[in-house]
Length: 228
Image (cartoon, rainbow, N blue to C red; front, side, top):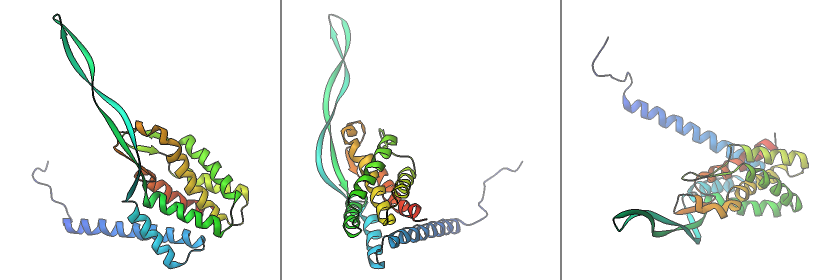
């Protein structure tokens, strides 16, 4: 049996370079997929580039819109009465939570949705499709303390594509993006706002954290699936 220190057969800097290369390839593939989806929406190259950059950078920024009183926090306290010890809950503080709107995961998708609804003249189709996807997303969304609001991967995109196929909408790409994005935002985030006190976090971001990926990615995938 061989003992002694273990040496990597490849120098560490080459391993780091290889991982960076893989990450770069993955980023390029993701950008190409997103660009393809936005092209199907009829957007020009400058707008596609601007939306991609704004969405990624905007995911780091939250706009506070409300402050909610959290649950009261109690800690056990031992009280001695006539030699008997009693453990009673002592109120220490009431936690507050800040409700914020994420720029990249809520503001920008909502703005693009409004543009598509007007430009493609979706009207009642957008309202109906969004309502159907919202019902599906809300039914499967789960509030997990310490994690956030969890939705099965690709579920909103698949639901949006199926709804668009059933409705036979002429502007399939635009309708898929609208209902896939807004259905996720409303079904996962907005309809679960009454339960934000269950989340163990001082800031609750609408369209932020884990749901940014869901809203951003599912909007793009919904377009691709609906236009196959």
